[in-house]
Length: 589
Ligand SMILES: Cc1cc2nc3c(=O)[nH]c(=O)nc-3n(C[C@H](O)[C@H](O)[C@H](O)COP(=O)(O)OP(=O)(O)OC[C@H]3O[C@@H](n4cnc5c(N)ncnc54)[C@H](O)[C@@H]3O)c2cc1C
Image (cartoon, rainbow, N blue to C red):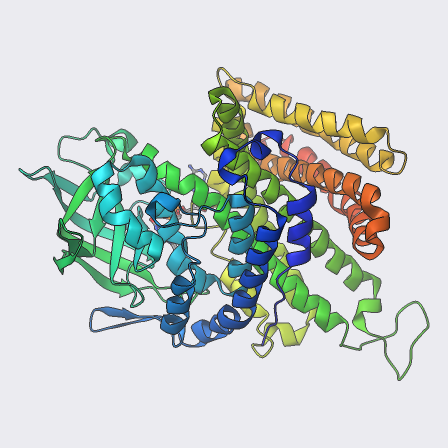
């Protein structure tokens, strides 16, 4: 079975040394959240994920969630683990204390998200969407809805879902058909079918709170006519107690390539009672509150699965002996595969991407908290702009890299990786959904380029580039970091040229832009990872004598990243600026 050790040391390094955002540090709300508290939480989280959650991954894969007489049964052991999970308050980690939450910042909860994703993504998904639904209700629900539904969701005795997809509408939500008819008391009756609904039903909680996109009969067509509704599985009386079953039933659950322990449901809504959330016809923008935060969390899923895949590949490479390395140290006929240059390259590729991603997501967690809680509206807006720029990048880059890393980890195991015994091929299968759900990665790239890059009244990308230029300038004065800072400068220039090329093509050559989106996202992602690595390098040289092993490891890994991973930018750029003529003129026969 796969093993996992939560990377608490690396997380604590980031928490202690890279909490460099003065706007974040000025947030009154998190004044008490110091290193001791962070360490305590992360150590407990590590124990939970390494011992209780990790075994559930294999169980869920071998005994998937199933539908029995209209009721979804989660895999063996999930019920007991979920009870402990909620009893110990893990669902509520980042929720508002007003509703019973523990009020921890994303600088901590995102580390927990990573650990849970690594240990068992299937198990994680049963509570993940609850937090998404909680955030959406918190921001857009009225007071009586919040009071009625949030406390039990925060406790984890009720869960949440996100119901967007229908048989004919996935990416293009403008096509959705589910109907909502207003009743005389102001509630609505919803009728329609939703497919692919994560945790659409399960046997872990007393109630499930579905957030459903639907149309009222008078709604305009397309995305402008979509409203958001809260539809409980079991009706909730005014005193908060549970009433009768609502008109929501599980038609079937999907048989899937991975995350088999997670129940992905087809839900039928048959005149189900619901409440409108936010304004009529503005449902999509309310749902985006949930989707944007969720997209970052999906990126972190890719990071978590990458980490466990890397750890297992590293361990295996230190045990498996095959062939002779170039060092001629061979004893007993063969060397450990970790002695082969190509295996070392592959491991360092994984490690340098993973640690860069963790530092980037920690930076983003600080920006997200500022965007949500800072007192100054201008600072809030500036942080929110950076979060919106980086959300599609983190979602897509981390999950695509997750595919590369889980595939490479399997390769290191050779045939033992492809067969089931070691649990390695499951990482690849489990991760494969992450580039698809929460908006496919191509759609994220389109969002980045067509919406975030080209912004009428703001130059968000220009501000982001400036931030990186400042970091480069600072580090160019340090003799040891200078060569790497200059490398980043060189690739940043390519990125600036790429951005100009896109803005120019946007005027009259949209196919060229569409065909370049994925490459642009990768380029910006690699720049963002290098930005994080530069900050890590700066600290590492300053702290070298305090912990030589840890910081030398960081410096060497950064060197690998700048020399071996960052140059990918050039090929993305060159390929993209060849335009779309070889693409759009081709006739598929
Ligand atoms: C396991 C699982 C769990 C899920 N959980 C949920 C959930 O909880 N709630 C929920 O509502 N949905 C959920 N989904 C649905 C998921 O979000 C969708 O599958 C996803 O958004 C893509 O929609 P689609 O499958 O209809 O693909 P389509 O939208 O049909 O896309 C097909 C292909 O076309 C591409 N494409 C589409 N439009 C464009 C465009 N404009 N430009 C370029 N390329 C384009 C896409 O990138 C994709 O490659 C889940 C799906 C799965 C498999």
